[in-house]
Image 1 (cartoon, rainbow, N blue to C red):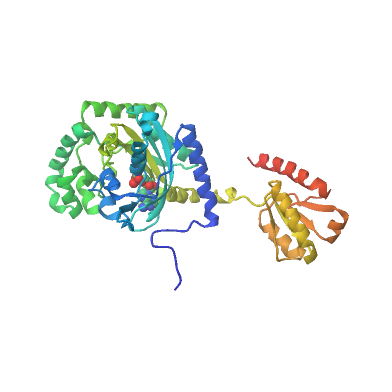
Image 2 (cartoon, rainbow, N blue to C red):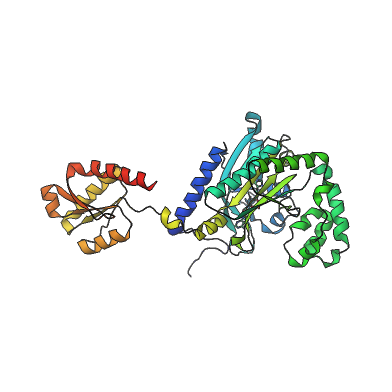
Length: 427
Ligand code: HAM
């Protein structure tokens, strides 16, 4: 029986890895610029953490969690997202007491049992940020601008920022009541999920992607108008700050997001190049989550973006070929007797941090030269018996096709110096 990857997962093959590393590098640099520090949490947590944190009425908890019992009888779940684990860790290690506000970022695989399609996987990767302990609307604007600036740095254009406020526990009941009044008369036309949520979490109905349901959402009352003074003030300050720093956004009152912990600001960054899975990044404020998990009452705001979706967008830009780094040098040894000598030189070149390759099985000049040309290497160094006996070697620059004779002692200093110049020209 031949094995293939489990449904909904994918191998990230060597020709794609450069793009992943590029995104990670730019994201890490941007997070650092905004003064966020990395945190790493386990891939699995107690199931109750997600049930309580994400909320029982969400798709994730209802149908998408990979839950199992370990040999000790503990109920565990592969993390479907990163926010609840970060909050758990902050409570467990008293992090917000030691540093407040606390700015953290994370990166790694998440797991959701979803129906796989382009841009939607069962194992996918997120990079996310969480700013804990800061109630100020500027913290929301900073988080949104961080997402926007990061994607701009990656070269992604035509992205849309959608923004909303879902209110706080004080005004949520008013919002939900108005929503129920509006939807009530059409309830019989909505899907079973919406019908159920009508009684448990009416706001969640707006998250339904079912076309048969969304047609009944046109003319929806503006949920902003039902919000309390504090929520309205908070939102208008977020809007003002974003306008001030010229982050383009659109207000969308249907943007409630698929997790229960949000209060006030919610946002998504979308691209129309992603098809149905058009959200590359999503987040918002979750002021009640830490208290709900029995930690100190701590306001917080954050986002996460999907690496697979960012990779899909960057593939459109065709930058992968520019990112691929060839060898600094390919060693070519002619004849079987020279291999041992070439192997010694190979080791010395690598000691000198020169990225070098040598084909151990080929002895002829032609095929090795052909492979070197294909490899995008900067130099080739030819080692034959004559070169070993005379201690004079031919170094060829594959771009300029120039060749230079060097003694064994001159080789490494010459290559290092010239590579420095080549690399600074490339930057
Ligand atoms: P989320 O919207 O569920 O939010 O996920 C964030 C991003 O992860 C999405 O915008 C999408 O790019 C990516 N993503 C989600 N599910 C999949 C999937 N099945 N396949 C591929 N990519 C996917 C959260 O997870 C929140 N924890 C974000 C947050 C952080 N809110 C506050 N802080």
